[in-house]
Image 1 (cartoon, rainbow, N blue to C red):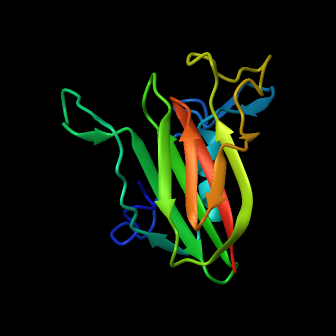
Image 2: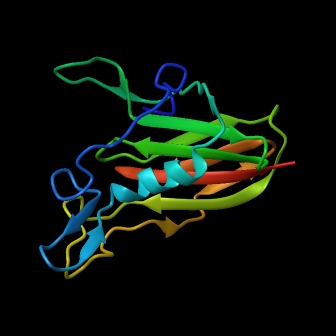
Image 3: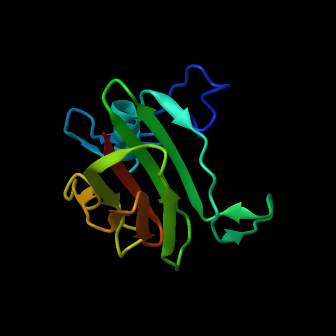
Length: 168
C-alpha cells in the first residue's frame, strides 16, 4: 500500500512492531523472534527504493461487506535504475486458489531473475513461536519464470511472493 501510494505518502512508519501487532515478538528478559509479517517489511525496506511503478492487475475478484470487486492479487513494483534492478512484492489473498500472474515487461529490458522467495504454509494458522521461531519464513522458490520478456508465476493461495530482477 505504501509503495503503490508513494506519489501521495512521502514517509510512513509501522507502529506497534513489537508484541502488540508483532513483526517481532519477545519474552520479558528473554529472547525475541520474527513473525511472518516481518519479512515483507524487510524486503520492502531493502528493495522498495527507487521509483514505484503503476501496475495494471487483471485478477479474479471477490466481495466483502465493505467492498466489491477486490482483487485477489495485490502487487507493487519498484524500479531502481541506479542498481539496475526491478522488485515485485505480490500477495495472493485467495484462501483456496492459486492465481496465475503474468506481467508484460517488454519495455524494461530484463536480464534475469536475481531472487524469488515465497512466504506461505499449508497450515494457515501457524505462527512463529519462541519454541519454533522459523515455522513460517521466506523460502527460495522457482515458481516465477521469465520468458519472452514476460514474468509468469502460479502464486499459491494465501501467499506473499518477492521477486527481484536484474535490468540490462
